[in-house]
Length: 163
Image (cartoon, rainbow, N blue to C red):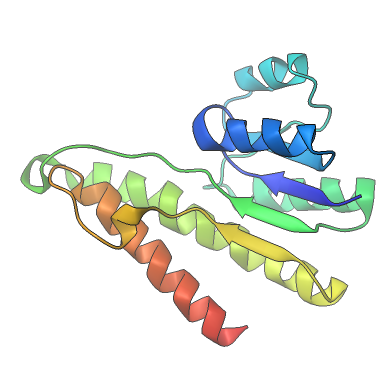
């Protein structure tokens, strides 16, 4: 059975993707940053919910190890975790922009960096990077989010060339 790890499944695209893939018979490992969301997903019928803050290298390694112990493989890793900070660039404090990048870019990068050796060793696997059209075009009042998604596009395009 194909298994899929999805980061950021508390709400939105991550949650909806997890529900859809589960309904299609995939073994889904939904992850959430907030431990309080674990019980909610379990009540929805997810058996393999795990805590994962993508800004924490150790938690990423723990999720990977747990899935490998249970299944011996990871078929798909979906880097979905992220958030959007709205506001004019002149109003966004640098620490807020840094927080945006810590989750949307550096967290995605660390997950990718840790999963690549596993997939190389397996000889297969897919990594899905959740970006946005706002990584290709800019939108007024979305500068922090635009910048983080442009960064994802650059990292992913380069990774494609390196693979």
